[in-house]
Length: 114
Image 1 (cartoon, one colour):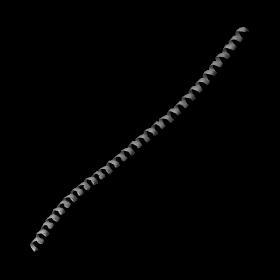
Image 2 (cartoon, helix red, strand yellow):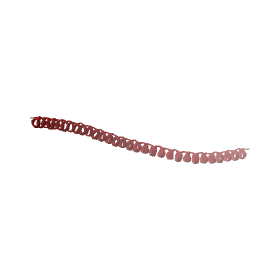
Image 3 (tube, helix red, strand yellow):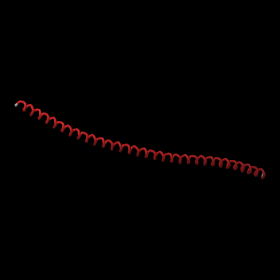
Image 4 (cartoon, one colour):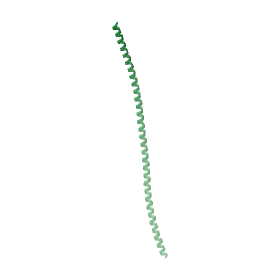
C-alpha cells in the first residue's frame, strides 16, 4: 500500500508539473500578447500625436492663407476706393472743362452776334 500511495503521489506530482508547465507556457503567451498590445497602444499614441501635429500645422496654414487673403482683400478695397477717388476727381475736372468750353462757345456766339 505504501508503494501504491507513493506511486499515486508520483503520478500526481508529474501531472501537477505538466499542468505547471502548461500554465507557465500560457502565461508566457499572454505576456507576449500583452507586450504586443502595449506596443500597439504606444504606436497608436505616437500616430495620434503626429496626426494632431499635422492638424495643427494645417490649421496654421489655413489661418495664414485666410489672413493673407483678408490683407489682400483689404488692399484691393483700398485700391478700389483710391481709384474711385481719382475717377471722381478726373470727372469733376472734365465737367469743369466742358463748362468752360460751353462758356467760351457762348461768348463766341455772343461776340459773333454783335
